[in-house]
Image (cartoon, rainbow, N blue to C red; front, side, top):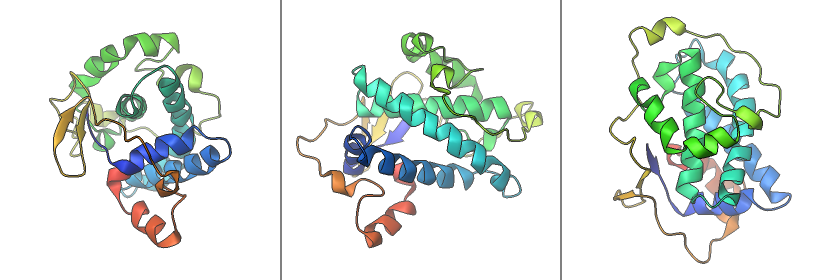
Length: 205
């Protein structure tokens, strides 16, 4: 999968692993992800999906923190959670929201198979042991799986984690984490003007 990565992703990582601050950052990042993926949905379907996504994404941030605790890099831990989301989109037939083509589902699963098996995660059960909250149902569109269209999917990045940095350079494996990261620039923790700008920036997802 190809992800974007900038200093605010490292700030978010730091925030998410801190007491109290972590809850604030989680709430803000959940809102951001719901908005980003909600905007990719069929407008007539957006509202009915957003409540589901909000609760689902809350669980994936638990996955993110656990992956970090197990030694995965920021990019790898975030990719794991995005794979979980794409499994969920696929299961619902929400192909227009997917980040990689349906024919790469197995490839993405296999790269993190050991982690996924440890927590009972698979394509049909994207949250596994991290399903610690009730996830509201949302209507599926299974007919889209017959001839999937996924305009936001980028194929050819299933063999590793690919990261596009702030200068547009593509790196395999992600950037080296800076030594001194200001947690105050994490989404939801910066000043109001900056926060408003960040909420409109899809690259933070």
